[in-house]
Length: 377
Image 1: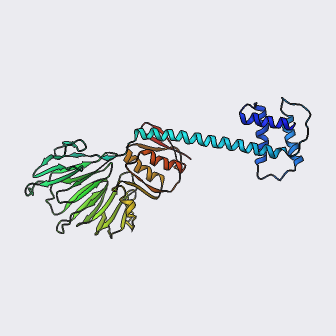
Image 2 (image 1 turned 90 degrees about the horizontal axis):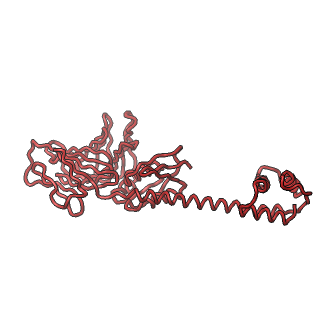
Image 3 (image 1 turned 120 degrees about the vertical axis):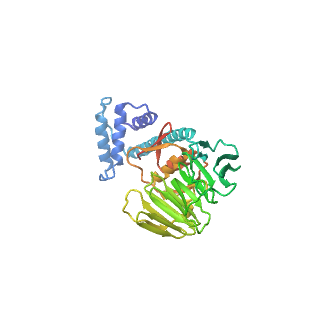
């Protein structure tokens, strides 16, 4: 095989015109060249191997001529060809994933100020569409929507101690809302959450029921403790700021204290928190103790400040937050990719910004309507 034949063969291979037999010659030789665990061969040994491959091609039975160190040039050319193919495939996958991410972004829109108010008689008021001003009346209380999109309870006169009307405010996936209860306590609900509470706190305590996540700024009242129940856990305070994450698809109920003090209890288990601490109660094991440790407060309340914020979070934790905020379903194909994710993104951002960051970590997606499948690496 002459130098000219070699050059032409490599050109044909790189241009995509080589026959199957010619491809087999080049690829077989190249794969042998790339093996790292074979002993170093002399030029004569390498030439002999190549000649044997060449002689077996049905399209060429010509007399084999020895050539010197041509394989070094061929190896460089082949390496360039394989790198080119690798870059092309990588670019193709990048473009393909970019199209998938853009498709998801067209369907999955960031959440906003959305909630439904459910009155004691079952009437539902879509707060997103309600006009500012008074939206309802419950007993001696008027319920108003403020210009900045919040709900406030006010009394025109003393409440009737015998009346214990209950209201519920619920946010959908992709919704968040803030309300001020009759005692002045402020509550901010995260997406896919609900709070059930009395129109007036007439009893010995102020008790509300939470599902999902909420941030509380409790008005101080030393004679009436404020109690939040959520999936069997009770948090009791007199007046303080704290966050509770009690989503049903999270493995733990997490209570994080920012200021003041709180008592967390579940059945016969009790824990006291100091500012900067969090309690974690397993939803799976009813016998597990309440663990208390230092909290990353900034990460915990990032959602309230309009951020996704993660510090070495696993992929499932990130995608649960993503699903709740962008109102999509997330599934996994095969084993869940093992990654540790750190960073922050505005929750008002297009979904593509979040997914592009994950994609750069090697996470790939498939989209079918509002269902996103995370592909195995």
